Length: 115
Image (cartoon, rainbow, N blue to C red; front, side, top):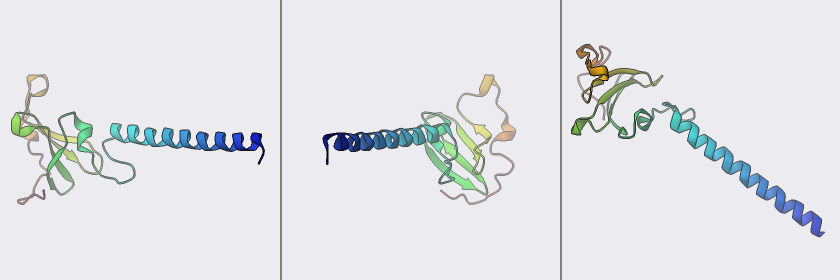
């Protein structure tokens, strides 16, 4: 193998790894933005805020996400399929107005909740 051929081979390998790292980094950055992971189709509780991250219950197609609700933070009710927030309980109310009709949402009909 000539010196030029080995250099070209090393360049190809390093280019491959740079592209691979770029793709992996892009995937992880992209999934942090999305509320639903495109590959696993699972809801990402951390996408709703820095202190959010704990799923505390599931009923039908609704998931309850705690954002330190046990310490005065909000509890979000979100749709499992779309990631759309259906209700927000506790914590500071948006614009100082709390809507008691959204907590829990009307679709939350389960007597027993899966944790």
